[in-house]
Image (cartoon, rainbow, N blue to C red; front, side, top):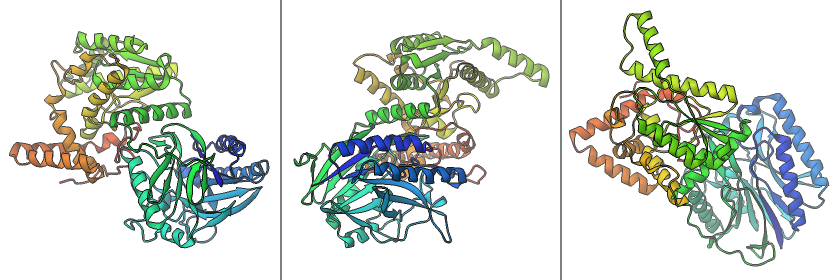
Length: 566
């Protein structure tokens, strides 16, 4: 029996020595478990994705030193094969690097396989730094098994839809007993199920058992959910590692079948994924924890308006970092309702976090008076509304600078889509937790948090109140926007389109199709489309947003600012 340890690690981009330290610990556990092979994720030495660090000579020198160190570490655990991911240098025309899989043993590189399919869509841009591999399938005998190797995207084209090359066909021709695929597959809604379907179909089509090892953790806007798995031809997924958690697990492979390390048949896991709202919750919490830790922040601050967006942001931040590391600031103006302040107090009491108060009425009056004195015109209307948001943003940044807290912005996807936000005001911050949630999803996740807790974490008064920026007397969001139940369905078509799940896409198409059957409905859709196009300059300047859905703002949606849109 071949024993294989999967090391689903939370690796940090650029921390080569720290990543290797984690790999060494996992390898030591693998040998203690009697494994002959330990497998790490794609680009495990650097973590995924190092970006233009790959253009820096000093960084590449550290990569070279890291590979040399790993080779020495393998001598200390004789006989154990290590499957690692690393950038490797190459000669000749084209890019000077490969995205490679190295099999190391006893200080020697036993096999090198270079990734053939380099994704350049959505959030990926690997062709910017790497040259595609041209190798046929690579197979190595380990123990009593012939083991084949693939890297992430190489396993996603078995249908032939995206590339002319299909590495799975080459692998099938090599006839290995088992295929090991190393991955850095980012998580979004529906991604786990997509992986299961693609690799189950490929395993059955080619008669190849596959072991899929994935990265875990948050890196800037993207989150890796782990959920490594084993797939058996005809049987589908027969084992799965934890989701949103590190794991070092040992499996057996014997007579063409995956089994436990003790030789017992693996138990087919429950394939259903997390409920959508729980998926959002876990992805955001992991994304924030790692973003804060890797950027050197222990504490966060959030402007607490008494509205649903800031309430949800505070609740998620508290769960991720603990109540002692979260501060809310309420900044009432002359237009703020007493209920908004009271709701902020109730929310922060429920969460057990500190709430600071910083009124802004005098500051707004001072700005307004000086504006009229300098420019001979009163400050009113939209400029006055935006001034209030910008004063609040300045106060939050003052607090961040003075006390070292990471400022979390509170915009949701609906508002960011149509530009219903103020640059240098409520867009201030270092990270957006809910910027990939439509407003209707913000309400749904808030209710889910309360339901899960069995008590009122987010006060019902906040969930029930009509959304308002409270920048003018009696102001409501629906004064400027369609109702969110309508707006969100329009935005799903305009922003995500066929990247939605089949069910979500069909529902949105039917809804918008019915809407466009009336003149007012057509005008509404056209207005929303114009708002989306005209707000690109705001999104370009916004903080990074944790990615939850197949198409999020940021690197996953690249649109021009200066363009003619019909």
